[in-house]
Amino acid sequence: MYAEEEKRRILDTAEKLRPMIATEGWKFVAAYCAVRVESLKNKLANTNLSDKLVEAAQNQGEIKAFK
Image (cartoon, rainbow, N blue to C red; front, side):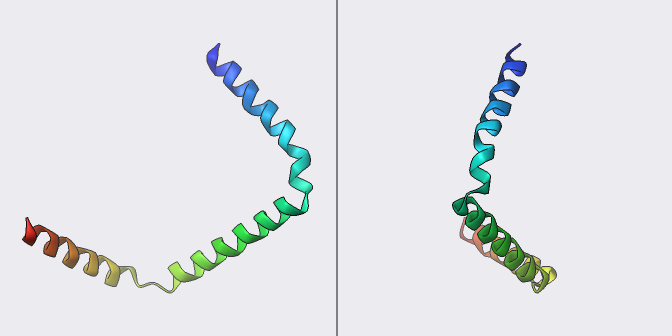
């Protein structure tokens, strides 16, 4: 019963928010998030993960040396 009530509350909230999605503020937020996601994708695409893993392993070794 609780799960059904929770689901109904979530759906009611979503219905109430639906008209807000078309406002300029929400369009700005959506565009900003899309730009940030693309930026992050590009940054990750240009990152050499094996170098980062080696660096992380070295840092972990240095941290263990201080213990």
